Structure formats: structure tokens, C-alpha cells
Image 1 (cartoon, rainbow, N blue to C red):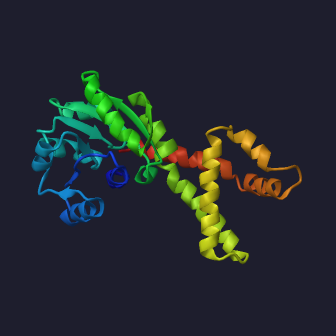
Image 2: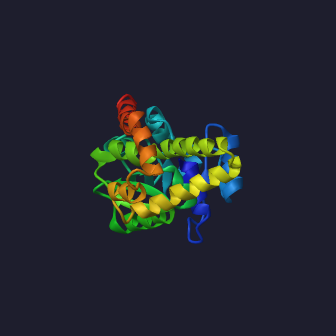
Image 3: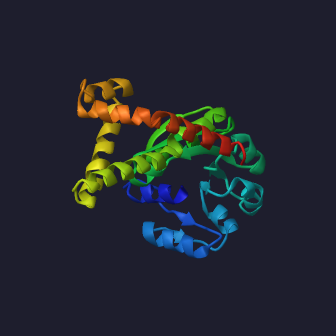
Length: 246
């Protein structure tokens, strides 16, 4: 997810002045630095010392180990899944700590980002961090206790929507459309539908598209018969259950 954020910032004219990268696999850090115009550094201590804001993008179990190596970080932005703000504050007692949950569309600056931070964070720093995050999409203030639910709703679901797009495009291609055209039509329809859902509730939009006795209603009946809506609810529940195991 940190790579997606870096790609989004690289598209913004007023993004970070410099982006530094470090990874347990150095070649990955180097490749990303080349892609977005940043710099790969040798280790975490160097990264922390040179950064105004250090983004944590590691497995939750590695938090304490990483914190020891990056102890010099003055400010930390955690994107660790299922890891409460308090845990990060305890690991970085001398830093201003932020927690954010972005989703993959931040790479094209159309993401959703849920944000919270510690009570001791200075307002000026909080405003500066928020300003940078807003370059990647919509930023929503959220209580730390609700981050797991938000993750299941907005961070995991791009994969589910991609699955829907793939299935619909493949169905179109099976009836004669060129596969690339079918995929493009599906992607544009998803994008347009997302824009409409900002202004209309889902039920109203569904009713507006599905005229009684029409082709769309037949499709919705087929989806109901396949328990499609319930399957998505189960997907969200499965994500929440897995986060509880982290």
C-alpha cells in the first residue's frame, strides 16, 4: 500500500519534496525509487534520520523490531492493518504518531483514506500531514476503534470490485465483444457508477436502471438467485475475522 501512495504522490505537482524507500528486499526499494523519482536508502536508521515523516508499511508482527531500528523518526504514519494507534505510540514513544488506512486507488489519486492521530500531535503537523494525504483522495477522520470495519469496507473491496469487473467483461467477451473493449466498457461503467453513488443512494440508482420486466431486472433476479449480495457480506465478515487473527 505504501507503494500505491508513493505512485499517487508522484503524480501530484505539490507532493512530497523527496521520497525515501527501504525494504528488506533492497531491489524492490530501488525499483520503486526509480519508478517514482525517489531514493532507496541502505537501512531503516538512515531512513528515519532523514525523514520528516516515516511511513510504516510492514507486517504487524514486525512493529517492535522496526521501531527499534527507526527510533529516530520524529513522526510516524502507520498503515499497519489491525494495529491500534496505541500500539504504535508505545513502539515509538518519542514520535508524533498517525494512523491511516488507505485503499489501492490512492495510486491514481482517487483513494479513500481514514485518519486518526495521537492527542499529543501538534496541530500544525497534523494539518501538514492531512494536506499531503488529501493529494491522494478523500481523507476521513475516524475513531481508531472503527479502523478494522473501515478496512473491510474500503481497503479490501477494490479487489472484490475487480472480480466483478473481470466476470462481467468475460461474459461480454463470450458474446462477441473484443476482450479489451469489454474490459474498457466495464471499467468506465464502474467509474461512472461510483461518481453517481456520491449523489444518489444505491437503492435509488438500482431502481432507476432496472425498469420493470426489463433486461436489468432479469439480471438482478439472477444475482439474487445466486445470493450475490450475501456473498459480499460474507466477504466483509471474512476480512474482519482474519484481521482479528493478526
